[in-house]
Length: 537
Image (cartoon, rainbow, N blue to C red; front, side):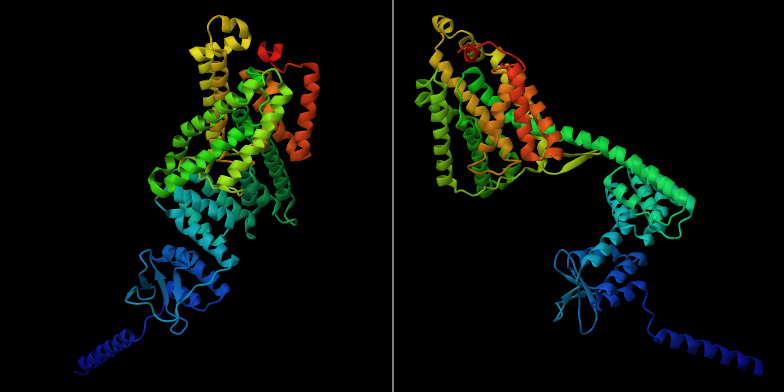
């Protein structure tokens, strides 16, 4: 009996203890502790809280950290409760998970400074290492590479072990190497392996990381670091040459677009048209007007704005060119000085007309989505707008060659160029050909303005920046020779980009001009001499 009574007392004590434990408040977990730090309204506490939230494994971790960056995490200074506002504007108590019917009074957003923003980037990078989206994992690996957050090493190793995407795996390995280089307790062999891996990366980030290796490192680490830095510097020098060539081709395509119309009016017709730059300007302003109409009335068509502007710019600039030829130029054939002065005065009139109509300030011309952004090709940074302009300039060049070689108008234009009197005696209306030829050159300048509106300021002075370079291209390539214009445009573009780092933009242009003057002394007709009306005159 006594035995049963003792058992009963022991069971009652256990039940009472369990009841007492259940009645006591549960100890807050890491996530709740971190929330309390967010409510402390201290930058250092907030940065620490972000790391703790990322490490807690809580389901809301990524949403909270993203919300801090977007100022959607708020706290109540009185109750120290922390809330998250979602995309729909609803408020959620992060400690209880309950939705709030209305916003409590006095809510404040969690404040940010550079340290907090860095902690946010590092934490988001860590959390997204295990995302099912390979692009997010790649971006996360790059974020960890930049932050070198040692707390991410454990998760990084786990992600690296199960990664199957080669691109992401490479980025994860580089992020791990960046942490190992910076970590003080890394073994010598691991540090050397990490240095060699970063050296193979070969970009500016890798060079900066390698140069941060402590000066008191072991001789083996110093030797590996020096070898890796030399490798990166050779790689950067190689890609710098390639980048300059790309920039030169990009500039050359711009010069080709601006000069190809001038190659017709000056090279073929022998007219020194100083108003050619204003035809480019007209094309750019046609693009601006088209985009304004689309923005106000048909916003869904914005991505097609350039396609709509191209024919309109060609027709508008071409029509203005025909008016100029019929109203001024046809009375001045064979008088180059008077042509120069007349078209120079006309350029001032056109500039002032545009200032009166649109104002003297720059006008905004937007880029369609398919021309925005850039991508990496090895060590090259390729922007889509420049790439499309190169493609467009070559398309215009090929189309112009087709018109000149395989159409009746092209045949008549070449006939008038080679022998005006004979062409006239064969029934060709030379005045009609002159007007259309000038209109064609002006129209091509107009579509050049559409392209240039994507990379330059649209203002009344737009054409003035290209007129001298366009004449240089035409003269250097050979008067009237389109292939010469093509080669000259890309040659001058590449030469400019290689001279600019050493001589500066202005002195570089002066050197180019001096070299062209010397070249013309030896070959007055340019790279490719072409017999024609302009030469024989």
